[in-house]
Image (cartoon, rainbow, N blue to C red):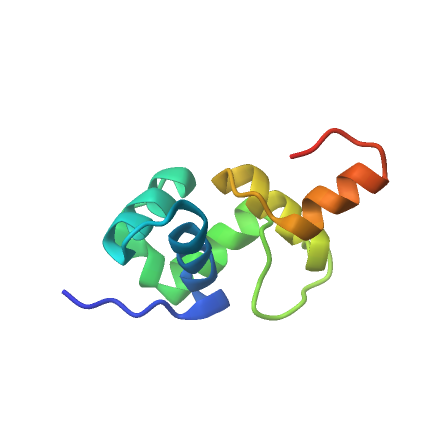
Length: 101
């Protein structure tokens, strides 16, 4: 079964990062992200389900809604949720003298 990545509308951004960071094939990257988000891999391509999950986890949305994380705040939550090393987040925490994510 073919599933599109969908970018920020679904989980494409997370899957692409998992592929690059962990050197995973797309099927393994989807399984990795699904496990980290505690959802089924098929859910990753469902726009509605992912929008609701992104709101719940506060990891960024396709449009900026008041009260939800944007920019580096969303990236920091993504890094923590999925165990990614995101350079901009790491540098921010280093410069701000916080512990890294």
